[in-house]
Image (cartoon, rainbow, N blue to C red; front, side, top):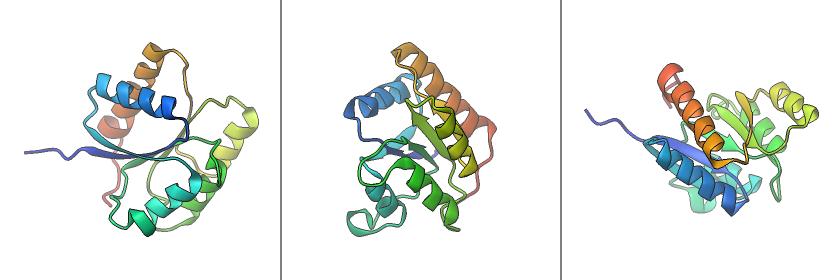
Length: 144
């Protein structure tokens, strides 16, 4: 029986962080399809299958940076969790911000998990492995 790859939507404007995430997922041997958008407007277009994202695959999980151009991650999170069709998608904030205000606001907006990105590659790989194990081995997710 073939297991379908995990569909991950990464909302990240820093190409270095995208590359680091790709490498960490590859190194962690996560069988996934990583789709990347660079800002909050694109994220919502992707999730709502609008414009160039008309044939987008519904993600199993969203990795969301907070500090994004055009529409920041805080606004994106609020819109996702306010939408009946999207709110069941787990959202993992993956950001450099350690601000207590950002953490509190994210949880008040019903984020599923808040992770501060480690700068060290080996630590980042560990974080990705933990995220993968928790969300895709331990947790039962709803079927889309």
